[in-house]
Figure: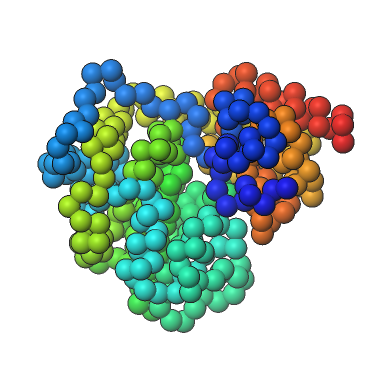
Length: 332
């Protein structure tokens, strides 16, 4: 019964059709999106009448680059980091390598790709190694030493290291963006929607050498993101108070989720404060039990013993999860 929900999270319409209830009845824990989103100021104006202006795009990219700690000429905006992955696969035209447990789009984008065996030697030919940092769905963080070793290997063989940091805003010290330089074969991806909780904005960034960015700009054309993305992104990346407050709040809420999971015999994994992974042979049954109580989580087709849970938005949501897990154990 988990098959329809193993590709992406957030499938509330499918969940309602399968398990009942209206989408608004559900507690959606199936994504790693911040459930307490950034709120735009009431006076923020969006001009839908004209084409997005080049100056507005440059301002957004400069504001985002400051947030990432990189030079603006190494940073470009585009409609989501998933689009970036697919465009880079086309542009680099290299076979991909990625962890066995990773975001499914890595496999989809790099059609000639295959999983990296944990203890196997790296390929002795040009490839594109794609890694999440923190990784989705297990939340592991790539160490700088490991990143530098992989980068040195890729550069020696004419390949590229692509680091997907869609979930790095909550743990900025983990970011490798500062290592990107004109002479390095390193590309870092960032996402607006996860940390700021506005995934529907479809805004992401590529941090890469200028030659890569020039090729991507050619593919995307003169208006890569829409007017609302320009306005919201520029304002949000400039809201340092909200960013600092959220970076403090997310680990506290993640720790509260950890406590609930442990209370019911589940061992949460991951260093990303936006989601937790649990390993249990009962993952499929647990997914269905929660779904029957209108709580959506994220199962995995190739890893039936895993279940990922995002953060509840508030204490009421956490209490609802706690009560449902208790009921599930009693019924089990």
